[in-house]
Amino acid sequence: MPTVYQQMSSDDLAAALADLRAQVDAVRARGLKLDMARGKPSPAQVDISRPMLSLVDAASDLHDGSVDCGNYGCFEGIPSARALAAGFLGCPADQTLALGSSSLLIEYEALSIFWRAGTCGNAPWSAYSTAHEGRPVKILCPVPGYDRHFGISDDLGIENVPVPMTAEGPDMDEIERLAASDDAIKGIWCVPKYSNPTGVTYTEEVVRRLATMPTAAADFRILWDNAYCVHDLYDEGDELANIFEIAREAGTEDRMVAFASTSKITFPGAGIAFLGASPRVIAELSGHMKAGLISADKINQLRHARFLPDMDAVRAHMRRHAAHLRPRFELVERTLSAGLSGTGCATWSHPRGGYFVSFDGPAGSAKRIGALCAGMGVTLTPAGATFPGGHDPADTNIRIAPSYPDEDDLAAALEVLVLATRLAAAELAWQERA
Ligand SMILES: Cc1ncc(COP(=O)(O)O)c(C=O)c1O
Image (spheres, rainbow, N blue to C red):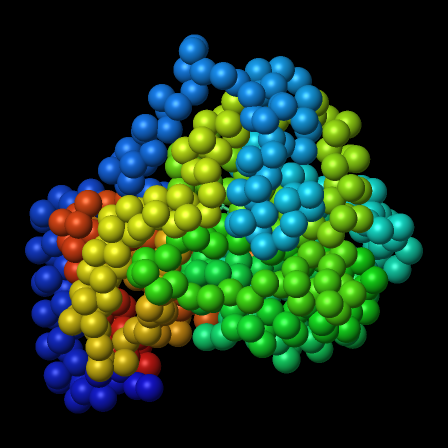
């Protein structure tokens, strides 16, 4: 769709450019200092969980059933935390581990184990390249996606292969084609519910195809990062099909490695994190992890399990988060619609949960929009961050993180984004004519 600026006469476009530049100068003069880059809960949201801090104190019984949380032991996590893990991940509790505070660290550890030790009797991923004339191990990366996932594979020397996201989830035709044809492709990064940053929840068909597709690599792994599994903005949340059940029926459960944490539920960086996998893979991962860990912080697990004793309690708690987040997401929708609808200058996602809105300007605009916003005092997630290597080939995508700023600051930052997008689009239209 052409932008309004592409459709103007040259005289009108020159006038529009002058007007937009004057508006940018006026905003610059206001000396704003706003941040729309941080995908973290606001201070008021974090405060919702403060009562949890009083649930375990000097007088508390430190037992979870027969487990003494005040001492070593119970590597796999305390029973009540593993019951929560099962609720989050959709697999039986004895196929879970409740560990420390970061799911990302567990993801890094699981991939590192596959890299150095292999999985289910297959050669270590690190040996593949030598055995196959230097061809690198690869992992599929739905894009736009989560930069830290790409960072983990990159750090291990695994090549990230971008695959486009659609409104239903990753482009399954492309994924099936790649996974079936190349045994160097060892897995896929997935954020299946309220995906980071598009907010897309994978449809049942996508989940089924992922679980059942033929893969050339016998040790293909679905890295199922269900970071936003309970992060609904509305009472009626998106439904995500249970991939463990589908995979079990299809005989592919060993393909599954699932993750989640309470980072955006209780305290980011001080929550508890979960891993789920088939009986065989969970035993294998536990075996390696036990080499370096006697037991995780079970007192923090106890605190969490007492605060959030079951999934009903989790859902009630998340409704309180939603009360903070929903107005911010609705503000994003209103402001972008008012400023950009019908201009052809941008499209954006309309998530019903999670933490982000994915915004696309015209081809070749995202870096310029980021720079214009920075010049007006608004920090965005760097353009390109949602693609492996920070390289967005079309230079369109920007991740909007509306959770942290207060509503006035968010409104001001969004107005700046609208202005920057209009100016970048007008500049592109002008360059096309030069
Ligand atoms: C998809 C996804 N996974 C993992 C994380 C980090 O989780 P944790 O704090 O449990 O390491 C984030 C944080 O933004 C995320 O968006």
